[in-house]
Amino acid sequence: MSSIVLFGPPGAGKGTQAERIMVETGLPQVSTGDMLRASVKAGTETGMIAKGFMESGQLVPDSVIIDLIKERILEPDAKNGVMFDGFPRTIPQAEALAEITAVTHVIAIEVPDGKIVERICGRFSCGVCSRVFHDLFNPVGPDGCPCGTLEEKRRADDNESTVMSRLNTYHEQTSPLADWYRSKGIFHSVDGDRAIDKITGDILIALKK
Ligand code: ADP
Ligand code: ADP
Image (cartoon, rainbow, N blue to C red; front, top):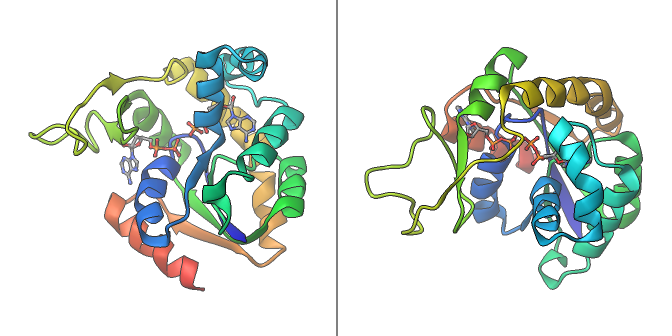
C-alpha cells in the first residue's frame, strides 16, 4: 500500500485536483477537512472537539486527526493506498502517517497568499456530489452540476477573517513540513496559479517521477 499527499495552503486547489487525480490513479481522496465537517454535522465527540478549532481557523489537535486517519485507512477502499488532501498538516501527523502507510509523492500546489482570499470567498460545492466550484473561476455550467442536481453549499469558515487566520496557521505550523518531506526526496512542487487542467497535467507528470 502506498499513498500520495496533496499539500498546500487553504484554497490552493487540493480538493479540485483530488477530484481529477482520483479518476486517473483510482486512489480514493481522504480529506481530513471533509471528515471533520461530517463529524461536526453528526454531533460526534470528535465533531464537538473539532468545531471551535475549525471555526477559528486553528488546527484540530494531532491526536484527534491521527485517530481519524488510523480508522479511515482500515476501510476496504484504502487497501491500495489513498490520496490525502489536507493531511498531514504538522510534523507529528507526518510521523504518525509514516507508520501507517508509505508515502511515495508529496505534491505541493503553490499559490501566492494574495490569491487565496478570492479563491476561498468564492468557493462553493455541490451538496449532492461534493464537486468544488467557484463563483468566477470555476462556475457551474449552463446544464448545472454534472451530477444532475446542484445543491449549493458554502462552508462556515470560508469568510475573509477566518481565511487570514487559516493562512497564518498554515505558514506557522504546516509549511515547515515541506522541508521535512523535501529531505526525504519525495517532494514535488507545482505552480497552482494557472488553469485547473494545466495543474492536473503537471501533477500527473510529477506522479510518474
Ligand atoms: P482547506 O481545504 O480550506 O485548507 P480543510 O477542509 O482541509 O480546509 O480544513 C478545514 C479545517 O479543518 C482546518 O482549518 C482545520 O481547523 C481542520 N483540519 C483539517 N485537516 C486538519 C489536519 N490535518 N490537522 C488539523 N486540523 C485539520
Ligand atoms: P483546497 O482544497 O486546497 O482548499 P479547493 O480545491 O477547494 O482548495 O479550491 C478553492 C477554490 O478555488 C474553489 O472555489 C475552486 O473552484 C477554486 N480553484 C481551484 N483551482 C483553481 C485554479 N487553478 N484557478 C482558479 N481557481 C481555482
